Image (tube, rainbow, N blue to C red; front, side, top):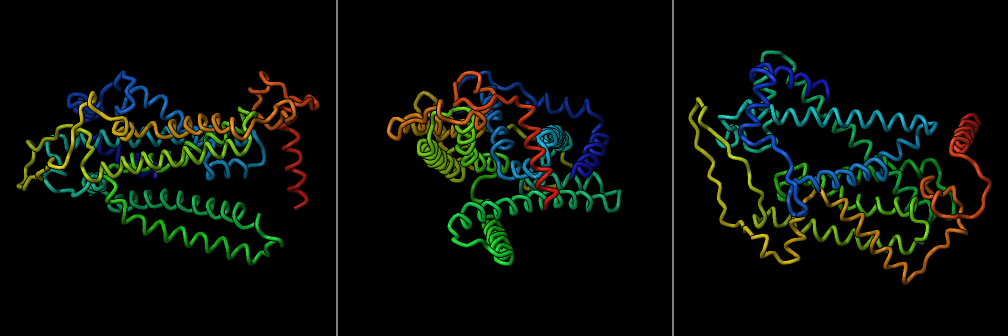
Length: 392
């Protein structure tokens, strides 16, 4: 995947005229700009949404996501888990930079002849394949290499997700309600059936994506944040807030999930029906050398609402999608605080200090267990793991 993107980026930059030309064309047309310095959460991309929103988003992805956590637990030591996390951070930053630059390169290549306006491309997701075909057409097999790279990355992520979902379904929804342990054959049958069901469901849902707007990144961030924000709050409450009991934490998580689902559904419906639209940058066809019939865009169904006349509901629906994870997490924690007034609170002095973050141990007095520093704890965990591995 990375190799395929690098090939396109290098050859495309050379064809356009160099890195300077790419940056100049994007800067002069407003594609590269500073984020808005505003506290308004309805501003789609601002310094607030970037700093606060992405912090919560990537925290829940890297610390509360079943796919990632399962990989951490599969490693033999905490030290190797930290190395894996560091490698992931370096890799995701590299891929994001390449993808962002690829977008800048596409605009620089077609800055005076927009393929969407001329109908050379029918959808935004056809822009990358179009540039690949035009950029690498002189090299036989390179276009196929790019497609293979995209499919390999997609299938790798898909297989990991299916594996994690099947494991969660088995461990959390089947085994706890079984009086007798499952046989190896029963376990395999349940896992395979779960994978097939989720795979078929995923394929069916693909046909509904076309009705949920045209921005895939926003849609993906929205779907992940709906569950990711409340789930992150459970991890934070479990590690940093020992006074919450399970009833309060789960209540906060469920209320936050319902709230974020309501907000996100209303937002996606508004985007799909044209009630909510974000202004697009101007496009040009002055440099086109072929005949075309331009696309006519209608704004009859769009509703432009003045910020001063927004109702509270309209204000919430137009919240930046980058803030969904933060909103879900904070809503869950606030509701958990309120729920603790009903369900009561735990007494930290009666709880095992090792169940909580080393940071929080400095400020809260837990039950008096034998003092063991963090390094010794890790060594004991690794030793137990090695002994168990040798036995198996």
